[in-house]
Length: 481
Image (cartoon, rainbow, N blue to C red; front, side):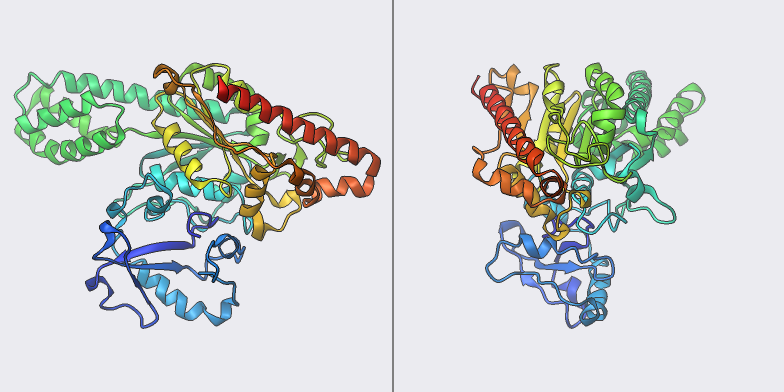
């Protein structure tokens, strides 16, 4: 439930018995399960005043007796608000669990919370997850669109920071140049870090403390390792002030310059985020240039298959048969295969994901993409209110999309080829195409066509099914190479 929550209002908390001394009477906890949590208490807590009531949490709960049920806010707000406020005073104990799996990721503080996105939004949970995994060192270039509206509208901002004051650095560019904007961020931090490395190299034969030399050497030897640079950065920042006091002249100026640039000691995680209108259409030229450059950037495409923010116009991501503005009688052409186009370079990491279909595959894709030393592209299926669906079922919609073959899951990792393995891994099972037509007709963007143009609808529905079969069979052949 925490994983899929679009607004980060559902969170797991861990506490010791001492932490709970002043807990409200209604703050009930359970004994932690697992070796790492044996001495801790556990609770799922909701922020009642930030919940939009979308209902996805209750819908996805796999238990026979649901752990969460939808009830009127007025019946619980007072008690649960007090519980939430207390939970926010608890120490963050996410370090007890490795974050590289679905369970562990949710004990990490989301650094994207309480956005103004639609209730049940299919985009925001992807951004939230990225901030849980990499948020304390993220730099985000955000294309104009839904993600810039809920991501940066005054007077509030959903991006936040942890107890150390670390969080995503976010900026919104124009619709048409977001990839270039993020590319510039990457070039700037690489240039600054290169200068920093040169300054450090010149210090190794100078009269500075041995411990500081060791930390500088550790940093230079692991320049692109995020976790090692975090460790080295902490030591360097701790030792520099005393070293500056003990030196003078040019040596002191170099040490001061390193301290002044301490913000780039930790390797940054550069993310370029936007919708399909940006990635498939208006910003595609720039996106293609950045992917081709080989730069170490991560691109997250929130694919709603329409221009969502401007009211649902057709994009090149819109599939055959869908009704949208500028395609009122159903789109007649296939959906652009952005992933295949990126894979043609051979050195771009590419993945397609769907939160409701396979959460483990989503986690793998996020972690693999970020760790890849080169360009990465993640295309995330994002059910949208423009689809004409029940948004309390947006997570379930993405699950059904994969089951019927409407959307496929795969990962293309160039590192696998270097190891002698097939770089393309098809994570989707063989689709059940018997469900495909029913899936289309469950959404107003498709069912509307049948009401207005019944003869054309049957033709376009058949074409849409042929399109997805052709696409899946192509992926299947790639996976068998």
